[in-house]
Length: 75
Image 1 (tube, rainbow, N blue to C red):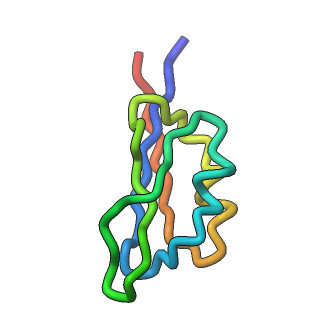
Image 2 (cartoon, rainbow, N blue to C red):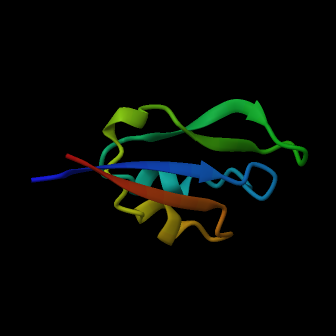
């Protein structure tokens, strides 16, 4: 059976630092960065990328559609 690995890309300039994505992630992949964007907001990032399953919960819940989720199968 193939395993699925996920990864996300956050549009840092659109992210407003609401942290909704971090609370909805079932695998505790996301966290808020100390880095700020041009508007002064902390942005989400993958703190634990190996745990990402590509479930897309973060991308679905993001109110500003800042998160793009990619999934890849591994044999």
